[in-house]
Length: 313
Length: 134
Image 1: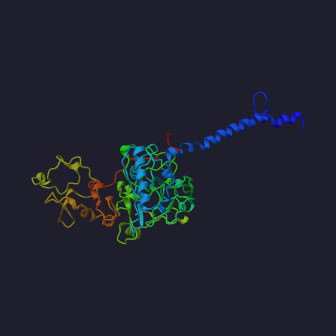
Image 2: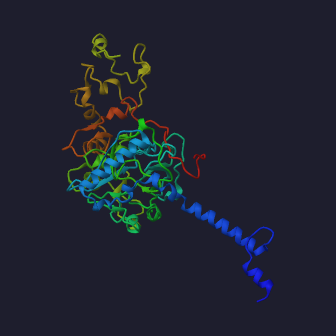
């Protein structure tokens, strides 16, 4: 080996000595280090955002009642620290013999959006983004293809030639979002509600991609809710304030409906377009509607078997 | 103003032809009427203005107004009976708590019952269409 080639082989990226190739290597290494540093920076904040207890928390289905009590107490404490609000976090279990169904009368719905706001307040959504589990499409009559609709209308409603289509999670009986979750952070419970364990969700957003109704939402940041506006009646898998970086969705106001109450969006509707109840009870309002109105579901051909129905009358 | 209807109407001979407040010279002038081709006494009882008048001429208390409306609006009355028309609050499971049903006139002005136009007041911000935010 010649002296010249040995110099090249062992030259270090020191000023005044390097050629172009080694300079680029140096730049590359520096950029690489910077990128690596940026990539792992969430780990540096990990301890602030996630306590050891939360990190070691079990999957919801594997938690004992004792575990749950500890977890709920921790969440209540963290909510007090972060938001300054005294809240109660509970675990609402399905009522035996109940299978929820929801129906919306599109002949009555006029797109006023009170349901959207009621959801926003009830479920402790982020105030900065006006987040809500409901979006209302203004649709031209004659189609249910939401490609032809808009959620951004701001004129008086209803408009001639339009109808209004509120879309939220349909609590599908064959939910594609559950199929794709790689960590089983979301599942369907006995009363039909598809739930999310926000502490188990890794935020991969596969479920968002799988949902044909765009019903799932991703928390891009920690929700901002003023202390005086926090709804203190909270459920672990329903309306407690969600962490950043997890997916959430409509849960039929589980913390209300599993206690026999109506969902917040129904109570807020000034047109009476919403009917909710137990479809296994043949005498319930919702059963009567399902038997006597010409109910349909959105994108029936996809085979998702929604349990939120629409009808015109 | 909460004065019993009869405090005035006991001293007035009812005009069976009056169709709207616009025809009157005293009281009720601002009452806009847009509800079919009826007269005041089609629904208000000429013998007792503290009661409503059903189609067979009998008296009906104001708080039972839904039976009045049901005489003409049968499909709505049927749906109302089944909890499929008119809003409500409270419990879907009535074994666990009360349910508060709205009455017809909570949402519909009986003199002009068409549901009003509304302004949508609340919108989630669309990340791509709305003005930017943090």
